[in-house]
Image (cartoon, rainbow, N blue to C red; front, side, top):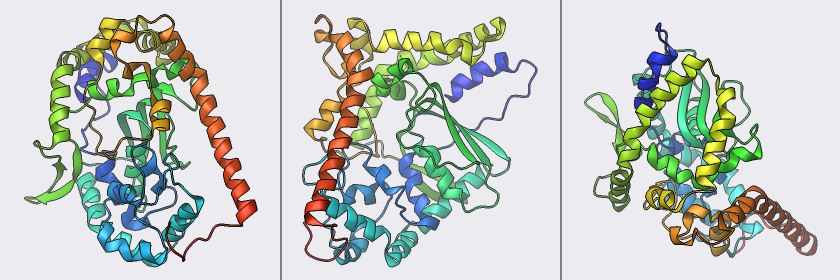
Length: 392
């Protein structure tokens, strides 16, 4: 993204005056624990750890937010919450009673004090890193990322929300799916360029058919940022080890995508030149871009699918386990299938209709059925016990 921006600047700002651009070493994993340093683990943040279908229980929540399970074990016992009790409703064995126990844990002041104590050092490192990079020197800062949920920007804002010198943050994502909508606060806003779920038409959803392709094509060359540490008086990012199996897969994927990655900056420069010379705006181009994305992702050629299909997708936020079968079926996309199946008549159109209409309907129906089931259980059995008793 930084190299693409540098190629576009001379066309967008031929007389100078371009916003100063700096690269920040951040990630969801690196920022998550910092959100707890002053606020604790909040009821609004904790469920974000369960957005990936691979994340299942309290162990995954603690892992995402950098919390020590061993040091917090006594609090789980106090609230009768088993470490293996499913908290993600996608998993068999999920019970509202366990979720109520988890909510009671979050309301425990002594638990929150322990969480803040565990994360205080990492929170301070994040602030010092941002100070070092000049993040607090301007009243307004634009944060640019590929997408999709806005979680990085959310965690970034929450990590500095207590500061009086925090800037106004306006985020720009290639696509904003709003799966983890930012809290409605004036100083922290986000919008999607090519797709924004809160404003775009349904045709713009085509970008969601193969999110991994965009992530891998625009992935930074360095390993994932796992945290921060002080070295020689400076705060430096702690990167994932080059020998980590996940990193090795990432390196292999980068080599496969290298021709595409190298072609993006000059393509962005040509785009910037064209829209500048023709006097076009983003609103003028968005229908054309949506058409291109739809035709390439919803109705790809077999050769395109073979060359672009992702082999390894690194995500330190997600657990290594396989999600439940129901979740895998809901998440199944055309790009997950072998390219040899593309000649099947109607396959691409069927997936397009399923993603556009069928899947949202099934998800809404599933949420309705779970709500009715939980309501019936409350009527028949009474309100669930929040704490105490034997864990399930």
